[in-house]
Image (tube, rainbow, N blue to C red; front, side, top):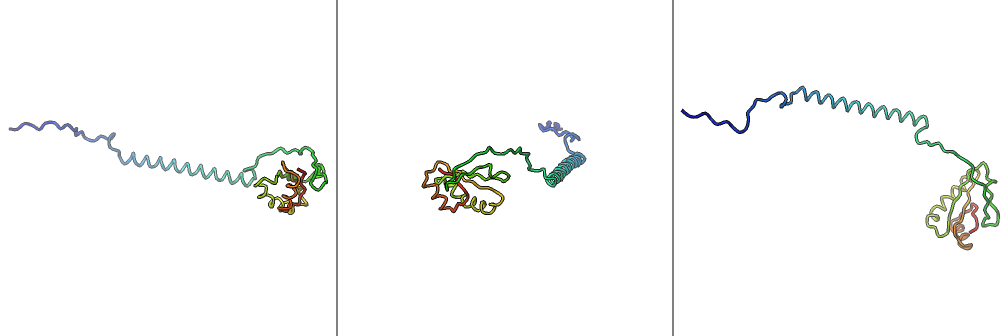
Length: 153
């Protein structure tokens, strides 16, 4: 007779329900995931509809701004006249600070001049020269065709 075989170091215990996933657990997890995804989609849809409603009401991107009149000032202009802000009451005023040595000022000069010509009946444009000498400022205005009033250097 031979001896019975020695026990194997690897256990061969039968599988228990806790160690092997059953199809019921997998199906339940899939239903939970589908429910969460569905709820997230419904929430996003509701948020989108709410945003569209706010946009239609004109309240998206609007910030209440308290407006007040600018302090009254006057400037001596290059042509010898005087600019008085009080004379422009009731109209928007565009104040452009510029200098002949300012590279971005050269780029914006044509755009501001076009705006001044287009809106001359409804808007006042005034240029404020910054740190220029007398011959450079008028030369800048001539070179870029600026016709709205500008102050002396």
